[in-house]
Length: 125
Image 1 (cartoon, helix red, strand yellow):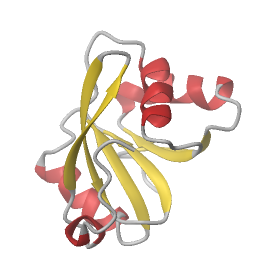
Image 2: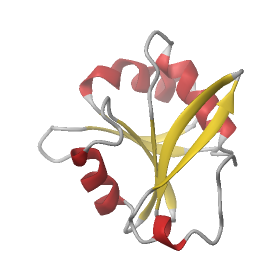
Image 3: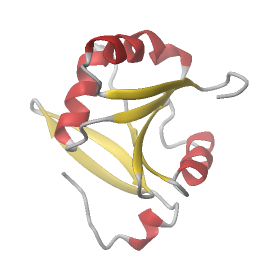
């Protein structure tokens, strides 16, 4: 897994570590924090204050991966490649509405890659 440092105590304590993964010749920056079951957090402002607050909360019980989502790509395919690049076989996905159609597409077509999908901003999410 690109950027994975097993001894990174800050990332495990809820302060995200910034790393880069290369997929198909394209670099994707992402934040990583916590440990446990994987949650991929898809937000337009992946490293903004709201995202950092959510990462801190989720990382108390999950390994949170919050990537910088590139524009102009097929998100479902890109997300599958991101998971492959990071060695993640299955994950829960929490996403903003802008990404939901693609997340549901991967959940439907991804042969069990997506365990659960939650939309940000909805009551009960």
